[in-house]
Image (cartoon, rainbow, N blue to C red):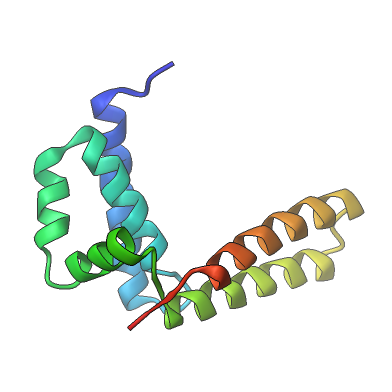
Length: 121
């Protein structure tokens, strides 16, 4: 089942908005949302994809990812910190062991992937 151009366009704008909020809010990462926005835009809105590619802030980030699969150190640090805090919050709130295991395993896999990527300058 295909989502279609409209669905991808919608997601591109949502992810771009979240990425933009990440510039303003220290607890929200920018890089992953802009990468997702670019992916969705490439499938749903070529004009928006070009705009992202040419944007003074987002363009270099996207180029760095496409050419080197590199993630900025700040993005790595922030993502790992937020995942750790989220998992600790689940512990404090008394989440079931299965939830802790699945969430912790998923977060650990994402953290390992992020840390294994080259660091963007």
